[in-house]
Image 1 (cartoon, rainbow, N blue to C red):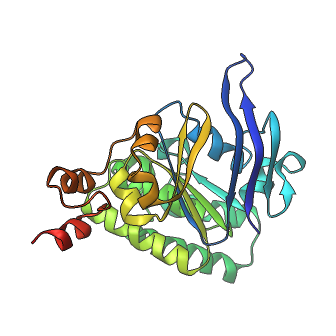
Image 2 (image 1 turned 180 degrees about the horizontal axis):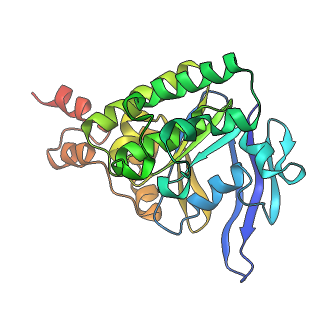
Image 3 (image 1 turned 90 degrees about the vertical axis):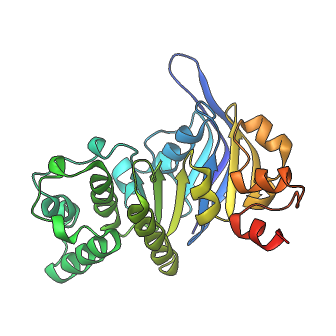
Length: 264
Protein backbone atom coordinates (compact mmCIF):
# COMPACT_ATOMS: atom_id res chain seq x y z
CA UNK A 1 0.00 0.00 0.00
CA UNK A 2 1.30 3.49 -0.82
CA UNK A 3 1.83 6.77 0.94
CA UNK A 4 -0.66 9.25 -0.51
CA UNK A 5 -0.91 13.01 -0.09
CA UNK A 6 -4.23 14.26 -1.42
CA UNK A 7 -4.64 18.03 -1.74
CA UNK A 8 -2.39 18.50 1.26
CA UNK A 9 -1.56 21.87 2.75
CA UNK A 10 0.13 22.95 5.94
CA UNK A 11 0.02 26.32 7.66
CA UNK A 12 2.03 27.05 10.80
CA UNK A 13 0.34 28.56 13.87
CA UNK A 14 1.81 31.97 13.03
CA UNK A 15 -0.13 31.90 9.76
CA UNK A 16 2.79 31.20 7.41
CA UNK A 17 1.83 28.70 4.72
CA UNK A 18 4.49 26.03 4.11
CA UNK A 19 2.82 23.98 1.36
CA UNK A 20 -0.51 23.90 -0.42
CA UNK A 21 -2.38 21.64 -2.83
CA UNK A 22 0.24 18.87 -2.79
CA UNK A 23 -0.77 15.60 -4.47
CA UNK A 24 1.84 12.88 -4.21
CA UNK A 25 1.98 9.09 -4.13
CA UNK A 26 4.88 6.84 -3.16
CA UNK A 27 4.58 3.11 -3.86
CA UNK A 28 6.31 0.13 -2.26
CA UNK A 29 9.95 -0.24 -3.26
CA UNK A 30 10.08 3.11 -5.03
CA UNK A 31 12.94 5.60 -4.86
CA UNK A 32 11.88 9.23 -4.82
CA UNK A 33 14.06 12.34 -4.49
CA UNK A 34 12.44 15.64 -3.57
CA UNK A 35 14.50 18.68 -4.60
CA UNK A 36 14.22 22.43 -4.38
CA UNK A 37 15.72 25.35 -2.50
CA UNK A 38 15.33 26.03 1.22
CA UNK A 39 11.77 27.10 1.91
CA UNK A 40 10.35 25.15 -1.03
CA UNK A 41 8.34 22.87 1.28
CA UNK A 42 10.42 19.69 1.07
CA UNK A 43 10.88 19.10 4.79
CA UNK A 44 7.27 19.90 5.61
CA UNK A 45 6.13 17.45 2.95
CA UNK A 46 8.14 14.52 4.27
CA UNK A 47 7.31 15.27 7.91
CA UNK A 48 3.65 14.99 6.95
CA UNK A 49 4.37 11.51 5.58
CA UNK A 50 5.19 10.08 9.00
CA UNK A 51 2.98 12.31 11.12
CA UNK A 52 5.65 14.53 12.59
CA UNK A 53 3.18 17.10 11.27
CA UNK A 54 -0.53 16.82 10.54
CA UNK A 55 -1.98 18.55 7.48
CA UNK A 56 -4.12 21.63 7.95
CA UNK A 57 -5.71 20.87 4.57
CA UNK A 58 -6.28 17.63 2.69
CA UNK A 59 -5.37 14.15 3.86
CA UNK A 60 -2.28 11.97 4.21
CA UNK A 61 -2.81 8.21 3.91
CA UNK A 62 -0.26 5.56 4.86
CA UNK A 63 -1.25 2.05 3.85
CA UNK A 64 -4.78 3.30 3.30
CA UNK A 65 -5.21 4.83 6.77
CA UNK A 66 -5.31 8.55 7.53
CA UNK A 67 -2.41 9.74 9.66
CA UNK A 68 -4.91 11.92 11.54
CA UNK A 69 -6.44 8.75 12.96
CA UNK A 70 -3.17 7.21 14.12
CA UNK A 71 -0.45 8.19 16.59
CA UNK A 72 3.00 9.28 15.49
CA UNK A 73 4.43 6.08 16.98
CA UNK A 74 2.00 3.97 14.95
CA UNK A 75 2.84 5.74 11.69
CA UNK A 76 6.57 5.52 12.44
CA UNK A 77 6.31 1.72 12.30
CA UNK A 78 5.47 2.09 8.61
CA UNK A 79 7.45 5.25 7.77
CA UNK A 80 10.90 5.70 9.28
CA UNK A 81 12.51 9.15 9.37
CA UNK A 82 16.28 9.70 9.55
CA UNK A 83 17.08 13.28 10.49
CA UNK A 84 19.82 15.28 8.80
CA UNK A 85 21.65 15.68 12.10
CA UNK A 86 22.06 12.27 13.79
CA UNK A 87 22.46 14.00 17.15
CA UNK A 88 18.75 14.85 16.96
CA UNK A 89 18.02 11.13 17.02
CA UNK A 90 20.68 9.29 19.01
CA UNK A 91 20.44 8.98 22.79
CA UNK A 92 21.84 5.62 24.01
CA UNK A 93 25.18 5.10 25.73
CA UNK A 94 26.51 2.79 23.03
CA UNK A 95 25.68 1.83 19.46
CA UNK A 96 24.43 -1.64 20.35
CA UNK A 97 21.90 -0.22 22.79
CA UNK A 98 20.80 2.32 20.19
CA UNK A 99 20.05 -0.42 17.66
CA UNK A 100 18.37 -2.70 20.18
CA UNK A 101 16.18 -0.05 21.80
CA UNK A 102 13.14 -0.44 19.53
CA UNK A 103 13.10 -4.27 19.47
CA UNK A 104 13.35 -4.36 23.25
CA UNK A 105 10.68 -1.67 23.65
CA UNK A 106 8.37 -3.69 21.40
CA UNK A 107 9.33 -6.90 23.27
CA UNK A 108 10.19 -8.83 20.15
CA UNK A 109 11.24 -12.47 20.60
CA UNK A 110 15.03 -12.89 20.82
CA UNK A 111 15.28 -14.54 17.41
CA UNK A 112 13.44 -11.72 15.66
CA UNK A 113 15.38 -9.05 17.56
CA UNK A 114 18.73 -10.60 16.70
CA UNK A 115 17.76 -11.04 13.05
CA UNK A 116 16.55 -7.45 12.60
CA UNK A 117 19.52 -5.96 14.43
CA UNK A 118 22.00 -8.04 12.41
CA UNK A 119 20.35 -6.87 9.18
CA UNK A 120 20.49 -3.20 10.18
CA UNK A 121 24.12 -3.48 11.26
CA UNK A 122 25.13 -5.21 8.03
CA UNK A 123 23.28 -2.72 5.82
CA UNK A 124 24.98 0.24 7.46
CA UNK A 125 28.44 -1.21 8.03
CA UNK A 126 28.65 -0.24 11.71
CA UNK A 127 29.64 -3.63 13.11
CA UNK A 128 33.03 -2.39 14.38
CA UNK A 129 31.44 0.30 16.55
CA UNK A 130 28.77 -1.53 18.56
CA UNK A 131 30.38 -0.91 21.96
CA UNK A 132 31.21 2.76 21.28
CA UNK A 133 29.24 5.75 22.50
CA UNK A 134 27.75 7.34 19.37
CA UNK A 135 28.99 10.75 20.57
CA UNK A 136 32.57 9.48 20.24
CA UNK A 137 32.13 8.52 16.58
CA UNK A 138 32.77 10.71 13.52
CA UNK A 139 29.64 12.41 12.20
CA UNK A 140 29.52 10.21 9.08
CA UNK A 141 29.44 7.03 11.17
CA UNK A 142 26.88 8.55 13.54
CA UNK A 143 24.71 9.12 10.49
CA UNK A 144 24.80 5.39 9.69
CA UNK A 145 24.04 4.55 13.32
CA UNK A 146 20.93 6.73 13.07
CA UNK A 147 19.96 4.98 9.84
CA UNK A 148 20.48 1.56 11.43
CA UNK A 149 18.25 2.53 14.36
CA UNK A 150 15.45 3.13 11.85
CA UNK A 151 16.17 0.12 9.62
CA UNK A 152 15.90 -2.27 12.55
CA UNK A 153 12.16 -1.63 12.45
CA UNK A 154 9.80 -3.22 9.94
CA UNK A 155 9.00 0.05 8.18
CA UNK A 156 8.27 -0.17 4.46
CA UNK A 157 9.19 3.45 3.77
CA UNK A 158 12.38 5.24 4.83
CA UNK A 159 12.85 9.01 4.65
CA UNK A 160 16.46 10.23 4.47
CA UNK A 161 17.09 13.92 5.14
CA UNK A 162 20.32 15.09 3.42
CA UNK A 163 21.90 11.63 3.73
CA UNK A 164 25.13 12.44 1.84
CA UNK A 165 26.13 15.41 4.01
CA UNK A 166 29.61 14.78 5.42
CA UNK A 167 30.11 11.43 3.68
CA UNK A 168 33.38 10.51 1.97
CA UNK A 169 33.65 8.18 -1.04
CA UNK A 170 33.49 5.09 1.17
CA UNK A 171 30.39 6.37 2.92
CA UNK A 172 28.75 7.19 -0.41
CA UNK A 173 29.48 3.70 -1.72
CA UNK A 174 27.99 2.19 1.44
CA UNK A 175 24.91 4.39 1.09
CA UNK A 176 24.38 3.36 -2.54
CA UNK A 177 24.74 -0.31 -1.65
CA UNK A 178 22.23 0.10 1.17
CA UNK A 179 19.71 1.71 -1.20
CA UNK A 180 20.08 -1.19 -3.62
CA UNK A 181 19.49 -3.73 -0.83
CA UNK A 182 16.43 -1.88 0.42
CA UNK A 183 15.06 -1.76 -3.11
CA UNK A 184 15.55 -5.51 -3.45
CA UNK A 185 13.56 -5.94 -0.23
CA UNK A 186 10.72 -3.75 -1.49
CA UNK A 187 11.41 -0.90 0.93
CA UNK A 188 10.70 2.53 -0.53
CA UNK A 189 13.24 5.32 0.02
CA UNK A 190 12.36 9.01 -0.07
CA UNK A 191 15.13 11.59 0.19
CA UNK A 192 15.25 15.35 0.45
CA UNK A 193 18.64 16.65 -0.58
CA UNK A 194 20.62 19.44 -2.19
CA UNK A 195 23.10 16.89 -3.60
CA UNK A 196 22.05 16.69 -7.24
CA UNK A 197 24.83 14.26 -8.13
CA UNK A 198 23.44 11.82 -5.56
CA UNK A 199 19.94 12.25 -6.98
CA UNK A 200 21.08 11.57 -10.52
CA UNK A 201 23.18 8.56 -9.52
CA UNK A 202 20.62 6.90 -7.23
CA UNK A 203 17.08 8.02 -8.11
CA UNK A 204 14.90 7.72 -11.19
CA UNK A 205 11.87 9.65 -10.00
CA UNK A 206 12.35 13.26 -9.00
CA UNK A 207 9.86 15.71 -7.52
CA UNK A 208 10.79 19.40 -7.77
CA UNK A 209 9.17 21.86 -5.37
CA UNK A 210 9.03 25.63 -5.27
CA UNK A 211 7.06 28.04 -3.09
CA UNK A 212 5.28 25.24 -1.27
CA UNK A 213 4.03 23.44 -4.38
CA UNK A 214 5.06 20.50 -6.55
CA UNK A 215 6.08 21.93 -9.92
CA UNK A 216 7.38 18.72 -11.50
CA UNK A 217 7.13 14.99 -10.84
CA UNK A 218 8.73 12.57 -13.25
CA UNK A 219 11.83 10.90 -14.60
CA UNK A 220 15.08 12.56 -13.53
CA UNK A 221 16.00 13.30 -17.14
CA UNK A 222 12.75 15.14 -17.79
CA UNK A 223 13.15 17.20 -14.62
CA UNK A 224 16.83 18.09 -14.79
CA UNK A 225 16.88 18.91 -18.49
CA UNK A 226 13.91 21.26 -18.36
CA UNK A 227 15.16 24.84 -18.15
CA UNK A 228 11.87 26.15 -16.80
CA UNK A 229 11.79 23.60 -13.95
CA UNK A 230 15.39 24.41 -13.03
CA UNK A 231 14.65 28.12 -13.01
CA UNK A 232 11.49 27.86 -10.94
CA UNK A 233 12.95 25.43 -8.41
CA UNK A 234 16.29 27.28 -8.38
CA UNK A 235 18.39 24.15 -8.70
CA UNK A 236 21.52 23.86 -10.80
CA UNK A 237 21.79 21.90 -14.00
CA UNK A 238 24.04 18.89 -13.32
CA UNK A 239 27.68 19.48 -14.23
CA UNK A 240 27.74 16.73 -16.86
CA UNK A 241 24.62 18.12 -18.53
CA UNK A 242 26.07 21.63 -18.53
CA UNK A 243 29.34 20.36 -19.99
CA UNK A 244 27.48 18.60 -22.80
CA UNK A 245 25.68 21.84 -23.63
CA UNK A 246 28.89 23.88 -23.49
CA UNK A 247 30.49 21.44 -25.94
CA UNK A 248 27.38 21.39 -28.16
CA UNK A 249 27.15 17.63 -27.75
CA UNK A 250 23.50 17.14 -26.77
CA UNK A 251 20.78 18.87 -24.80
CA UNK A 252 19.60 15.43 -23.58
CA UNK A 253 22.87 14.38 -21.93
CA UNK A 254 22.53 14.14 -18.15
CA UNK A 255 25.24 11.92 -16.70
CA UNK A 256 29.00 11.55 -17.10
CA UNK A 257 28.35 8.31 -18.99
CA UNK A 258 26.11 10.22 -21.41
CA UNK A 259 28.92 12.70 -22.11
CA UNK A 260 31.54 9.96 -22.57
CA UNK A 261 29.35 8.23 -25.14
CA UNK A 262 28.94 11.48 -27.08
CA UNK A 263 32.60 12.48 -27.21
CA UNK A 264 34.03 11.59 -30.66
